[in-house]
Image (cartoon, rainbow, N blue to C red; front, side, top):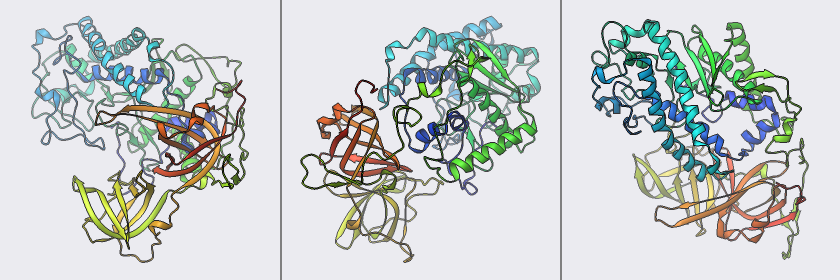
Length: 618
């Protein structure tokens, strides 16, 4: 099975704390790079090419999901509608919801492809239909990304299309091999309508058919049957994001395969790359596939190995074969990955424990072919070189514990970012319960003596899957609200937000420490180095446009985003450069899971206290 979901009762790691191949490769490239992006949550500039790759993969998968036995080549991209999944990625049964392919009538045999050329013409035409809407969806995502960079107008749609067609041609080669082999060991089961766990997405329910497959024939295998049988498993583009992972039995690692061919009876894992392959990352792709070979072995009771590992370079149409590690090699890979999890995830490492020690840049030519390493230093092209001590930055403290701000009669005390804690545990009585959705109240009011606070349920499930609201909330009930995010709204009212790290339980344990509502510090002052700034805007549900601005700021103990409405920022925001040292005073706090954020309001203050050299600022 290409998907292995976590077992909630055995999962002590949780979805936010697993290791992945990309994290392992990032750490190996440079420990400090990993720390900045995974602990401090710095987000690199989101250039269009990052979204183009996703659009290419989506278009390919949407063609693979369709069938030449049901969909004519000229049909619209919506010919096969979205398949129904639960929020956790579990497919909904046919008894509960209709599936899109079940409502399609099979084409007559003479309307289906009669040759490989016919099948190729059908597949390539479907690729032409699916790429434009996929690119448009990615363009919208890029437009809405606060870290967007570059110009979408520079996206070469013809080149994107050629990459889609290259992938489909590679797949057609697999279809041809399948037909030449008579369909492999699973043909008869497919013709009988049998479907194993996690079948390749095709718009039909995951359960077996009540009779033969609608496209099954007798005798020699048809080209339509070859397309159906050879279809690899892939992440259904309509499935909820990040739910189609294979999770290690011990839950400390997860990975998501691109394509898994299974028609031979032994799996072949394929990694799709919308690139030429002529850079350092090609080395990461090889290591990632070896890790995936280990993951497949571990998630199949250690008695099934993958038969092949391939990288499909779509920008320079070529297939790179990666040697499959043997059992002993996979055991070493697994041990190394688990050791890395203990080093990086069991407890959060310190900044000093992740030094800026970049690995030498590796050399590759088109198609991922190893060549001599270039005369290049990894730090030269790092997004964080201006604030990293391996580049032009420093880990040293930039500001003292207090500072005299212009126009202020007294010094402003500064808190260390790493010590900011927006969470509070409070006791009280439910004064009101309202806005119930799916049996869960999303808005409540907590009364503590004569004081009140709003409770806002942002997440209905904790990180381990258990409900955040663990009691039947009723007015007058005595409750304990654990680890809520303490915020203050624009009216000055206290709002206790519940995210996956919060819970509302009955107050039946006097031993749990709690806070008084008005003893909690609501406003904070911080200072540090500007890592980057960002802006985002949109139109609200009422049709009113909105605009927000923010920055990532770092001191010697930590980093956090600070964000507020665009009109609330003072004029100094427009003067900021990366590397400037700033003070942000009178901030509120907010959080989601482990990410702490500063809330800049009209009562907050931004002050630049040290300017970076404008001739070198980026």
